[in-house]
Length: 553
Image 1 (cartoon, one colour):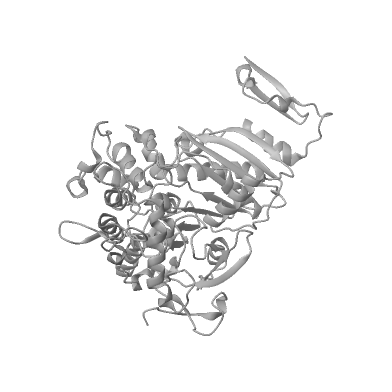
Image 2: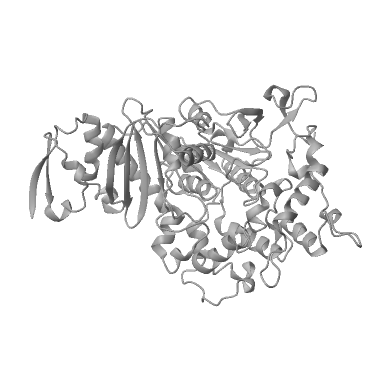
């Protein structure tokens, strides 16, 4: 049965009686109980708007919650994680940020099951731009923190779950779930952008002037994938620590690392107490190569640390490693090679040891290292159209033997195609940022991909630096702010200057902050292959003490 009612005395809606059961009672509040502005009413009415025909139904969207939020004070957890996510996104906000600007909070989903959260700054605050934060890892969660961080800088900001519910490196959602894999691989970021732009237009009565996508790890992969598959979706891309060749990341990099750090009983070879020994030895051997002793290895390729120096001498058991442990460390640093001896994936870089806790050594005794979960969950549930037998033994897997059988998932999810001409022709710009201390995805893999893009573009008489630039950050970890190097950088402003103003970034200023969010060190990063070189005289905590050059010079 259909009925009509007046919404706050302004607008008449026709809905089914059954539909009333899903609406919050607050929408029936009398006009005398609360006086709402036109903007607040527009926000609340988004849940009644019909977004079912987006892309002729292929991006059918339903808003299940929309409410206007005024004067919201973040609790301590929200404030901390909004701060951290802002740095992950390359759009930093102050550590002291407690209040969120007034905004319209929208939650919903795009068919079949891609949940999202979109926060729209109040109309007088909006900067006319849309910012999508792509999900990380194996996705599975709609994080509220990126949108919180984004609206502080007045972007209409969205996050989503990749099309499924999961936690960490949980791949079970993908078991015999082809549509779920497609959404996770590339479709989700496209259709949520379609949905966001439609909702933005309904709320602001105009489309965003510019659209950006940002993210780290799988979120960095998302930006590169969008540039390839949907070159008109985003004007700008920030790809941090990107898992560009996603199949190789999991089934070569993580798989080989898992084999290196687990014994034949799948017990960890390296324990948390061993990590600091390794990290200290590497820093002592290689920190000063750049002329600055600051706990940061500026260029791991210039380091020639020998793990064998860590082995215990006869009769010694303290402050040293067993030969089995040393062999594991050597395997982690070594690149993965095929049967012909060709490098197919970079090894972990020297200086990444500060992030080995979790990735290489288990955080808790009941857990295994993250490399194991990333490899085995991907293998069991994502890698093949039909999931492997539940009793399949992961050590039996051979990447080289399975390349042809992996072609289906590789074609779906890998973003390593170097042909980005359509993105360039659309006017798109891309910042690729990778930390040298990344213990999850070696920076060498991103360098290899970028070199391939450069070679392809040059073969078509085009210059990669005209639309995409790579910045390598010494001491920066995978997606966090806790590495020894500088992890704060305003990539979104640099990207906007390039997209909007046509000013290509000649450098990216990076900062190191203390626990209070105070800047204690600054250093420029220059587009690869250029590097920041200490001048040998000035204060090494000041950006002015560094010049552009090459460390090996």
